[in-house]
Image (cartoon, rainbow, N blue to C red; front, side, top):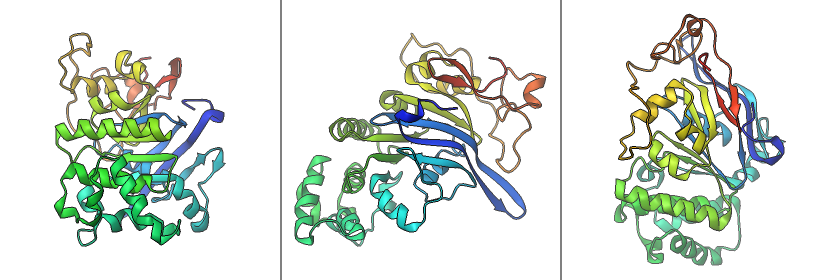
Length: 319
């Protein structure tokens, strides 16, 4: 399944899997997902902790090697690229981390941190680096004089902006945003989210936005993909996912989000119990052990993604 036509995708993954072997047990972290991402758009990847979202991002960046499946960037299969090929490609694919406190070396200055990509990739002249970094800091809303400051002197919101500046330094096409709001106060989250939207319009960036916060995902995403236990449950445009929700798991996630709106009705849906272990997934539908609508077939056969119209897909035997 492709969420968008292949020839319009900046990034496309096909049947991507990541299995970990631990003490004779196979842990299916990601179990055969496929999706496409249009250039300049945002795909929100959502699901509970342990659903495999971060592993997907790491595989796209080739920080984790896929067990099987393929990853295409601008139509080129990058799954088997060696270290030399990936070195040049990583200039075009960068990461915004979840925790800016651990992402920055407390013993190195902000200027050192943001110039690090220039040193690694040997870009430009060393004499020009400081001016470029000060411009980048100003672009993301950090005072340029923070160049000589250390991480301990900045707030969490400022540190996340520094991480964004570092990711932008190589002029990437794709940013993997791995829970970039989770370590920030709510008031700061709104500011950073607005910054990401502004930067996307300014530089034509494409985002894979990984999050468990559906309110944030709804605001920033053009497409939304819902994962559960390493599998894709539902994928489609933001309006389809949030207004024409099809999968019981997606409805349960939406019902758990506090809302002041009387327009959205998700029904009396709740998630009960815990997600099964990816080392021992249930037969059939992975959500069968927690679904209020479970049928016999759900416990025997894994549902395939079915198109519901206009690029909206869901994997459920009820549909």
